[in-house]
Length: 348
Image (cartoon, rainbow, N blue to C red; front, side):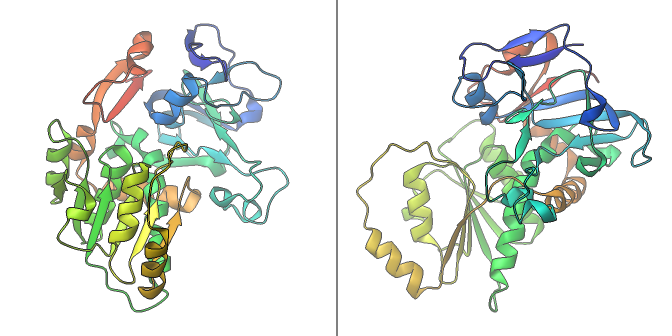
């Protein structure tokens, strides 16, 4: 069968393999026909050789962690043939740490987790894959065209879940939310903010292209000016860029008792002249919280599936800039100037 693979740590090793082995039954009882995988920045970094880890004893790694497939067989009865399904990316470590032991693998403490298409588990960019029932998320048929958005949606579902939990520390009635970054994560974070009835603001450098219209379609206000020029203080900030200046400005701009969730990963190596003491004073005196969030556990995947099912399906489809057939796989992994989400299709 066909699969898109790389040799981790070797730039330029992306290739389409025609004779990749069928998935082993050890991978899971549910056999799935791949429909599509989403392409994201993590894939680009793995292709560039920045990181990635092949399964034990293997040289190559099958890419793809944003999955959408259709069940071919499931002898456990968890799902039925024909059902839409997505595979949860992260698996708990084998030790396990206290969090992995209770299925909170997104909060793994020792770093020995594995991840499909990223770290030590084959990805979903292959014509057929298998998954264990506990890591299979059944999808409503309405998501047949956009179900590969579930993985990024699970990341922001976790972020909002933790925002809600932190907010419950005291009486808290948030009104405004600022989302920094209008990529897939940012726009999905804005979607979940709008579903919560918040006044949503989206910040991104792009002044043209599809991003302003996508934000407006959610009822959000779109900004391209620096955060420090805003005329309001957001109760919630979900930072999705990882850009150091934006991160710091967002932390400084939050309202009293505000919550700032950092989801963007900075590359490091950049030094900024910044008044850390002033930020510390503000955080302490205003009871603000800044926290980081990455990945998601089963509960968050379920929350994300519910959120996507409730969403306007036309709006979700408009997040997909390009749908590329697997035969043209290199086009899918070549970024375009107005891309938001590119999808590599295996079947329709």
